[in-house]
Image (cartoon, rainbow, N blue to C red; front, side):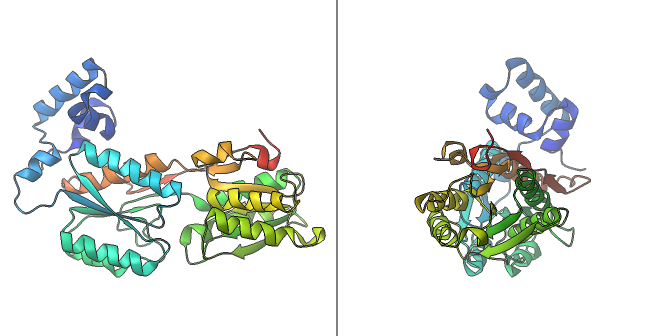
Length: 336
C-alpha cells in the first residue's frame, strides 16, 4: 500500500503543503480551528510525519544537501532560508555548500553530500549539470534543481523565467527612451545570465535603432560594479550606453555608485536596472529599479518537492515549477 504523504493530507484539506507542515510542526502559525481540522485529516488518513518515519529506518542522516552559486548574493541566501523553512517543518536539517562562482567547488560539495549520505539534494548549478548529481541519483538520492531546469525533463525543478526577466528589463529601458543599452553580467557560462541576455536582445531587436553591448565580468560584487561604473564613465558621452541591464542587484548598486562618483548622472545620463530586487535595492542612494524574484518562496517550494520525493510520494503532474518576473520601477530609471 502506498504510504500516505503530506501532499495527500494537503489535498484532502484543500490547503498547501507548507500549511500542513505548520499545522503539524508549528501550530502557532495557523488558526486553532484549521490546525485541529488538519490534524484530524492526518489521523484519518494514517499520515506519519517524515521525521517520525525516518526514525524508524536505521542509518538515515536527517540531512538535506544544498548547493548555491554564491551565498554572498542575498538572492541565494534567501533561497537557502526558504529551503530551511520547509526542512525545519519536516524535522530535517540542511547542509549548505557555497560554490562561490566555482564549478570545482560545487563538485566538491556534491561529493561531500554523497559521503555523508544526505537524504536528498537541492542543486542551484553554477554551469552545466555536475557528474556529482548523477552519482547521487545512482545511489537513489532524490535531487531537485533550484533556479534552474533539467533539460532532460527528469529532475523536478523550481526556476525563474530569466528570458522573460531580461526582456522585461530591456523593454522598460526602451520605453524610457533609451536606445544604447548595455548588459553587464557574470560569466557567460552561467545559464541564468545567458538567458537574461537573450531576453534583453529579444526586446532590443523589436525597436529600430536600438543596440545592446554585452559586458562580462568574472565577479558580480558591488566592488566590481564600482569598477565597471568608473570604466563606463571614462568613455566619451557618445560611446556610453544610456541604459544598462545588470545580472544582479549587487552589481547594479556598485555600478550606480561608480557612475555617480565620476560625474555621470543616474538616471538622467544612464538608467540602470538590477535583478533580484534584494532588500538593499529600495534603500540605495538612488533607489534601484529591479526584476523581482521570489527567492524565499522558490527555496521553500523546492524543498517541499524534495521532501515529498524522499517520502516516496508520486511526483506532481508537472515537475517543473517556473516563476514569472515582476519589474519594480524606482528612481534609477526615473520612476518611483
